[in-house]
Image (tube, rainbow, N blue to C red):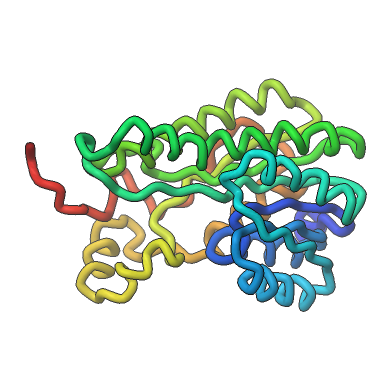
Amino acid sequence: MLQERFDITGQVAIITGAGRGIGAGSAEVLAECGADVVIAARTTEQLEEVAAKVAAHGRRAHIVACDLSDLDAVANLANEARDAFGRIDILVNNVGGSMPTPLLDTSSKTLESAFHFNVTTAHALTRAAVPIMLETGGGAIVNISSVVGRVAGRGYLAYGTVKAALAHYTRLASKDLAPRIRVNAIAVGSTATSALDIVMASPELKSHMEERTPLGRIGTVDDIATGVAYLATPAGSYLTGKILEIDGGLEVPNLDFGFPDL
């Protein structure tokens, strides 16, 4: 019975930023649950590696190598999914990010670019995908937000602001799209992806972050991808408009960039 709650055999998922990290992990776990996937990122070679892991679970992967900051390209993923598989059931808006910068070094252009990459792209794909999702009854959308959309620390102004916006976008979109499409998000804590390569390579930095995390460790891609599976499958069918916090218990950022007082 429990396994059936995670069964999405025959469904189709789109995952952005799927060449590595959380996007790649989400593609693999959704394939393990039975979905065919459309995976998008810049680098074809990375996508091919993910596609091979999807195939190992007996599912199909359609690769789209593109610039996901291009709104036309990201919106076109909906057409790619329909052309390749005939439907869309799940959308994982994973692509995003922003470099840490002190407030006075964060230009208006930087803030606008961060909003574009983290929020506007998610809206463009959601808007393109929803009509196709409705053709087969509805589905589930999962947005990847961050713990720093909720907690405050120096250097996170752009990233935290736009991830907070994505979290509230999730709540608002869930009302517009209920009851046929559920919209939830994951507020991700520090996770061992390429974004933390420098940290993971430094035992001192890694230990510092672990000590500042209540659960005493850095998160894994599997931690987040399992949450994506929960929100995207029937297991999470009574959730919408919610932000699932998978962050090791953080109430303050666990990485201090050392930016000095003004």
